[in-house]
Image (cartoon, rainbow, N blue to C red; front, side):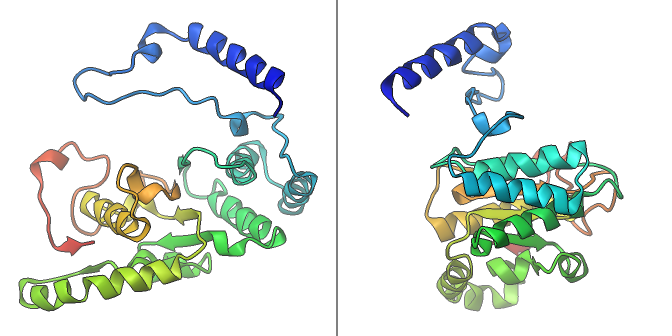
Length: 247
């Protein structure tokens, strides 16, 4: 991008920020002490065009092949557009909707797109159960990341094998940029923490959730809850401590 374009984009972005409500312009939300940052993400735009014409062609081909509806196409394009950007911000996305709305179709379209781009190694699909993973030709997060339950009896041996588990998981995720986790409603808070902690150990990126990997969580929270532990939407998260799942 040349200098005039950069200056024009900067001015445009400042205008957008100026028109935002005051609550959005605050850098601190107050009680939680969280920092709110407004990101000018072009890949969210409907008329986004990738710099590589081949990427645009492939995205159009996949859309036509899978006959994505409006909402499916929106979800697909956010991820597809993001993958065609150069060094974009980390993508943290939730793909929701009731059963039968076509979330799996979006996943299959993404797998096809990465395959057409010869970048299938960049995208992995994970799920909490073998059955859910098999439906999308994916893996359980336990097997892919080496996350497992432990008891007090095997704690010593578990700690000794931690380095091996992390190294093996790092090898399996070599070249991966996008991690899609299906059936998110079945993953409890302590399990979500274990996943994020393991990805942090793998990437050695400690200042971003999930180790800086682009993460897409899919599922309907009105469906199956976790088999144990607090659900991600639970109001009792701060009162519950579960150490049976270790990263």
